[in-house]
Image (cartoon, rainbow, N blue to C red; front, side, top):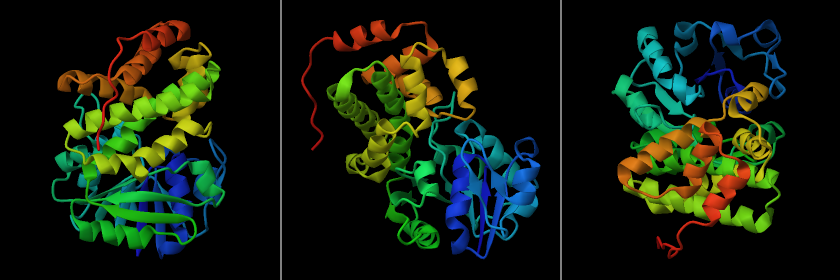
Length: 333
């Protein structure tokens, strides 16, 4: 079997490294401007994490040859680039029977479409699955175990990806038919991870961390249910599991963004220093727009949107959150 990874960033290279032994052929595709000699020739990357790929892995900027004969095409480009990639895959001759697995977590702007909706908009006949869960790349590269969800409306597709990409002892996969819930859990938790890093940088303590995680989860559930998700999915790997991991770890890019915002740094400087995509930045805008459309209250996400896109100070933001009108705690079960 052949695996093609679309996207030569940190998570794309990590997945190529992790899954190499599961496939006879592995190809990594990246834009020509994103590839460099050390990666192409030596199969080695040093930033933002060090990854050493096996000799059999092919690294190329030729999309047509990259997808030729691939059984699974794994999309790991930023959400803002997914539509363009799909358009290019269409031109490159992707076949409907090739399974397209999306591993990018985010919502397209300005359309507010989930990634599966974007993909189906361009490639309506494509076999499609979503991969999402608590998967911090650095820990995966260290061989530490984790698990994730593979969601598809076609359970035969989900089961094929599950068996093909499961790595015993390291990467355990569970199937799920709730594509909406798996996607939204993985996407919206990035905003709460920014809030968690923000609170940590301000020294607000563990009580505050627990409060943000649970109230943030309430927002994720409120929005996701309105959009058609099964609430039980949001307490699984792609929801609560991913939320706990990213809200607790400085290895999370979104947590790091929040930490730097909490130190009073500006978002443009933060992203330049980070040197990689933090999906929660744009997702904070998307969830606020979705919430407004659905007439749902999302105070934590709204606060992060303000932290990212306005000049509000960390102290002003905290006061605004803590002094809101009192209310009853909602129940979902």
